[in-house]
Structure formats: C-alpha cells, structure tokens
Image 1 (cartoon, one colour):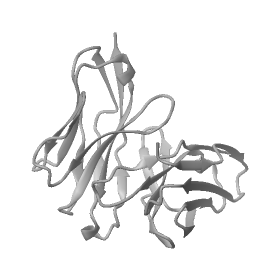
Image 2: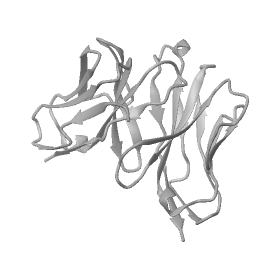
Image 3: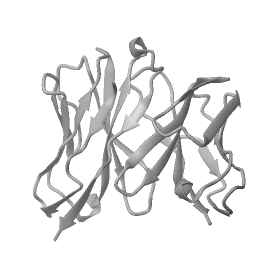
Image 4: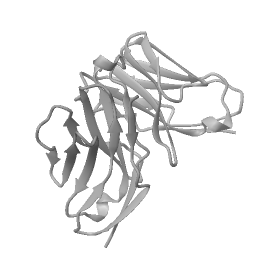
Length: 113
Length: 118
C-alpha cells in the first residue's frame, strides 16, 4: 500500500475557527491532491500540488488554502470554517504522467457546528 | 474544459450477471488517462482499471474491462459475473497531460452506486 496518511481522521470544530488538515506521504510522489466528498457530488478537487511550493486551484477552492513546503506534506487550511465545509476530505498522491493512478488516504471526516 | 460525467446515480444487477457503468468525458488535451475507482461502504478508494488515450486496446483487469470509445468520449466500466462484494460506489476519473497546462489535474465524476442482488 502507498504510504499516505491523513490527520486528523475525525474533527469537530466550531464555525469561524481555522482548521488545518495534514496529508503526509512517504512515496516521494510529485503530485498531491485534496478533494472533498459530498453525497451527489462525488469527489471535487479543492487544490492540488505539482511540486514543492507549486500549487493550483481546483473547482471548489473558495474558503480553502494549501501549502506544500516539502515533498512529503500537503496541508489544507480552512481559513474560517463554515457549516457548508462539513464533509469528508481525501488526500491523494500520484507520480508521473497522465497514465499513473492516484493513491488515496483514508479520509478525514470534518464536522463544522 | 476538463469534465467527467456519470449519468447513473444508482444501478442494480443480479449476482453473476454483467453490468455496465457509464462515463463520458470532455477534454481538449490529446494526452489523458481515464481511471475507475471503487469505494465500498468502508470508505477507502480502490483503483480498478486505467485506459490511456493512445491505447489501441480496451483495458482489462480480471472481471473489469473498460469499453473505450474515443470518438464518443466515453469510457464505460464493464463488470462481468457480478459478486455481492461488488456493491459499492464507482467513480470515473480523468487526468490530462501537461499540454493543457493543468499539470496533471485529476478530476472525478459524481459516481454511480451499484447494488448487487443475490
């Protein structure tokens, strides 16, 4: 199994507070992705990274920021959590070109109350 | 723009029968990859099968095959001899090459929930 770990696995937070989710990999893969999964929407891309300090927005990036200061860690920050950000968050990693599958973390269930 | 569409929110199939899950995509990049993932009720994402845009043959992996029709921009997943353990969510995904400038952005469809009945 690909070495990818998300932390925390579960979190409950209050509206308006900042929250940071961590994705850590031991595979030295170049690409890292953050998704959110909501019923009826599948997995929607929030942000992704194609190298250290190289990131780009996905389709649902509003209210989220990311940072990648080293290859192994990709952080997702909810700057001021809202109830609409209650979701399951997945991190994925991949290497190489378009023919390389992505490996996923176990997911983080975030509840904003 | 890069897009993946799965039009079947739910499907059911009898055990031991075959089932086709639909996926259409849109891209202007000539180089791309198409993937199918399975998500059982436990929540993990399991990679099933891959098809490259330049591949001449349809991909197969055990009971899974990908019916790739490039001109129609479709990449349907066929599961043969369905088993009860195949009950899960199935996601189609696409990853473009770097020609689009998207740096290998990987996007997913909304998914199809498959129920296998005994």
